[in-house]
Amino acid sequence: ETGELAVVGVLRSRVPEKIVLRANVIELDADQELLLRSGKGALRIREDGDIEVVGSRISAASRGLFRLVGKMLRLN
Image 1 (cartoon, rainbow, N blue to C red):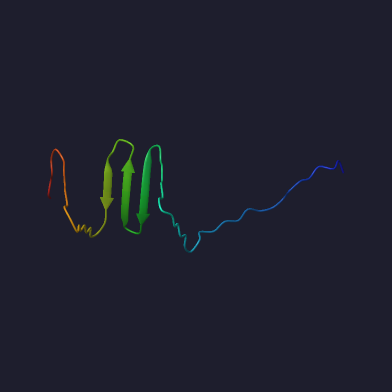
Image 2: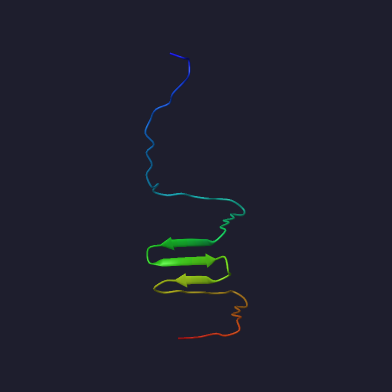
């Protein structure tokens, strides 16, 4: 009656089946922690520089030099 508009509705969201990001550069920036997870596998990057990779089987390959550098390396 006063001429003002009122919008009334229900917001409904669902998880999309698939999201595709395509770009020359994709940048994700998190202040405290970035977590990528799929099933039982995960990659976690923390603000203090700690990086954790979790998976039932982890593979790495290089066509050139493959370097592991650290003060201490612990294998099992």
